[in-house]
Length: 487
Image (cartoon, rainbow, N blue to C red; front, side, top):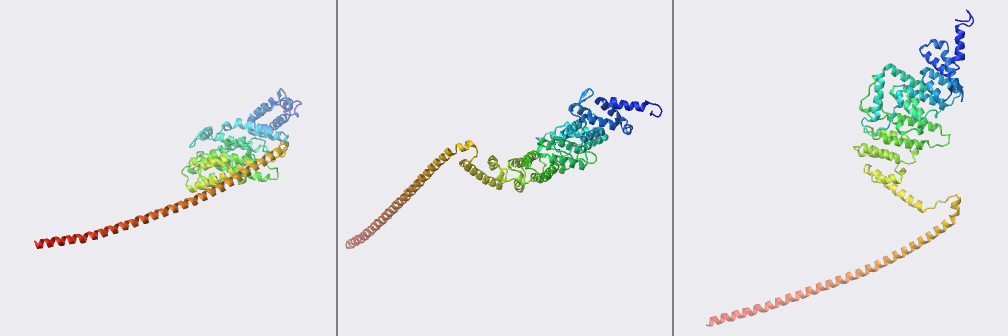
């Protein structure tokens, strides 16, 4: 079939057909490349796969070009490229990236391929509102059942697709959204991908953690044995995988430390709010230990939180879900938050919260008084601005302040005089009351003395009268006896 036997033989005609007919058309190139999937390694040895992949990459990387009868629109070539086998897809994406295509476009193509070939990517795992075994675990149970029914060979194929897609992800942080990375992380855990791959996804998520959503972080605690069954031990019964989020936060802090030379961003503040919301969700799990909750809450440095209202809400949720906590554990849990960083509304709520230990309530009340005092001082203080409107009203404001101060001083003076008069009246009243009490006491004593003197007089008179009566009666009795004797 070569030219050595005859001119215009089959090899030259086939080469001309590939070059001028197949490779010049987008659809024909895709068709030929798909047909080569069953002809390997012959198609590889004849360089047909390489030429088709290079042709597709060249056409896809051209801007606003017309390929045969198909316009080079992103949606069109995404669908066609996503229908190819994973090894051919990788070669095309690598060639497109080498031609300087934007990372965002490559990322969109990878996302579309994953949604097509990974059936679990379309499962939205929302945060469960009821614990035990809720919607979240039910969804993953359905996914795992689907995986087990499909067989080991298909599972290996899915695992290979995941590893291949992660390997060709553009290194730029904004190439794919954080939501997609977290979905890939969940799928990698489902299909038991290598630990190195999982660590790579965790690092990528940590680099853009501020763009994540709470529901995306709710990764089920999927633990499997070698046989592919659930691990039902008590230590693995928590609803969510807390260790994964902890490692992601650590990667985020490492990335922030590396980016210290860049202008300051609001990454830590947004991540702190995200982490507090995540803690509020996982705190509802009755099997979540206080140690895991504390370690995750303390993963961020204290200065990362400008306000601890979200952390207080998470702690309160944990106390509601774990009513049998001891006093020591409740104190240990409340030491995580800084009462001085609570807002006034949070302080008012915490002061009436009977789930908090007494020491924490006292600290909250103290901070509440400080905030109320600061708020009152803030109302009295007049903020000086640099705007033109403040400059116009500055004179009138000063006059009003001076007038109010004069009135306040006048009121203070009158209050001082009234207090002095009140004390004087009270002193005089006290003196008169003491005199009246002394006089009444003297009268009472004199009356008592007089009464006792009259009593003595009467008693003496009675005794003398009785003495006079006794001799008279005796004399009378003697005379009567004499008369009887004489008779």
